[in-house]
Length: 179
Image (cartoon, rainbow, N blue to C red; front, side, top):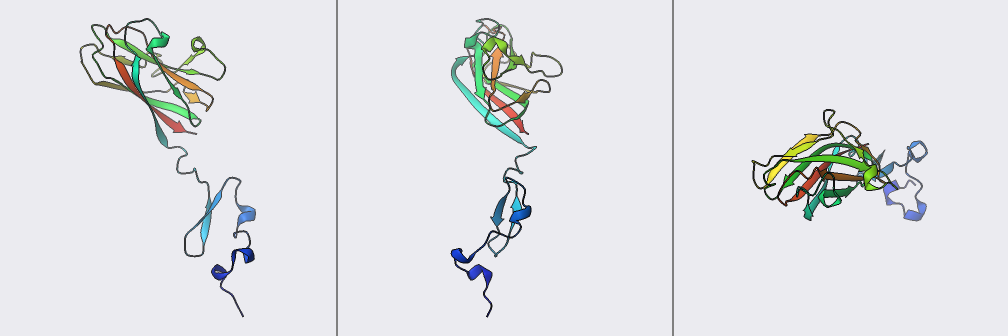
């Protein structure tokens, strides 16, 4: 007498077929028809972009306080290792009568703010410029292509040169290419 495998009780089942040759970290995904496949559950994320968002409600990033002052800085924790490949900053208010230059740095675990490594766009550490002639709700974006590897123990800081003469909270988006 033969039994249909899918009708066996759990106590009568064995490891899924192929478990001996499955790569470490792979999981078996059943297809609902008595079969399935082994795969990396994060493969759809590898080499894809993930947007990491941080909205700054209280911080005035362009208020003329000074170069990289703590009050002109937004911080974003990194949830997964990869490369920061892009940034977008929206100034909610007018930045005043002067432009405000935005830079991006990485602070590795255990280092103070002053020990940041600046990221670059086209070889420049001045990543973005908020133009004082544009007005409110100005969004600027850039590709980041240098010193942009990040680990889960890193914090990315987005900071102003303090050139703006008016207070403006900013919304910041980073694009993280997962490794």
